[in-house]
Length: 191
Image (cartoon, rainbow, N blue to C red):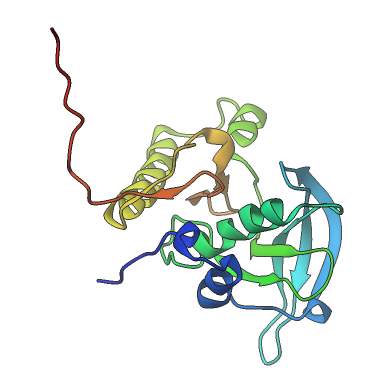
């Protein structure tokens, strides 16, 4: 079984990015429209056309101008984490752009967006079987993360993305951390 590594254990965070995320030339990326905003910057819908591959829609997270080195490190740590996962219910990292500005994290595009708003917009329109299928996908993604010794730390409907086939994928690994195998429990005493 593959061992997953917390990118925060690297002395040079750029090394973790190089190891776990593929660098994409910015000329292969076309930004189209803003679809959201996050802690570090805006999120766009765009297209990615890699040599020898078909063009695909992607989501592009950008790091806003004027960032500190710590903000850059924290932003790219999410890509270093995502790049270690390979599961149908975990958002897929396509790669990163770090050699030009803005710095970008590029992931697969999920047509229906965040689960919370998707369910509100389509209230009462799903069968029990469809809803159970969506829940099973989320559970499968979380089980996979648990097997990798990762704790997501922010599982919420806003961090689950839904594609056009109603497949749900866990996203937003900004708060994820590697779960150490340290089994020592704190000892409490009373006097």
